[in-house]
Image (cartoon, rainbow, N blue to C red; front, side, top):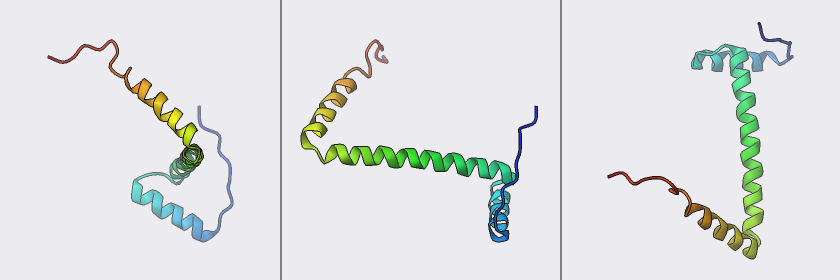
Length: 85
């Protein structure tokens, strides 16, 4: 089943830029646009996570609690795994 498609209006300059980028990566323009949209969503998620950690660090007691909890979880990383001999 073919994927649905739609038309997106962009300037000629943007269309040419997308075509150059797609060609340089060996992609079709629609595949490049999909990759760029996905990357933009991932970047937005990382920006929100970084803002959250920045806010957490600005509260010393909350940050200390976070560090203690992370240390507890770190102790469980090898639970149930045998050591290589």
